[in-house]
Length: 214
Figure 1: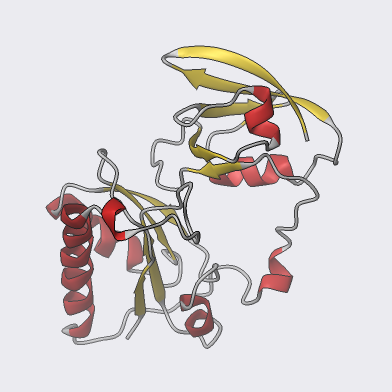
Figure 2: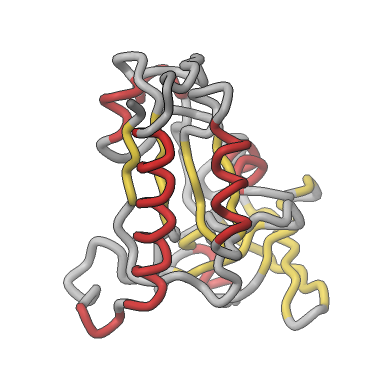
């Protein structure tokens, strides 16, 4: 049976968008997920890789199908400021109900999901090492492939000093298109500390070009 791991986060956004990792670890994953996403009126960005920054990675390393469900990070993630008052209980229930239906479907099948390898099985093999940081909290839940939403901006970080705001959508970095979180990571890997780059963002329907020193 696959491991379904609801990731910790405090809210479901008003677009009912979630991020689901491990969607490439079985042949049936995406069809199964889309069935319940439609039923619950949710949207999702899919990441095929089985390895990721949570406990599900250990199961994928043992050739077990996984799903990692998350509403994404936020400005107070893993800080003392992330308190119970910020929890979206209605959103939490929706994700719990969605996860329960998914789990019961898999548990009651006559046959297991068909496992398949989807990416590396250890952090050292992934190669996602960055020499620089932009200083933002990416919106991992965006499912439109029309840019990377900025879920938060770290105070005094490069993005903050350049005037980037929460709610901006990054569409290009140094002239290179950014359509998704994967484009963003690929672009970031190319930059050096101290380099000055342009970052194109959409803000209130208009393009704004920022100069960012990394």
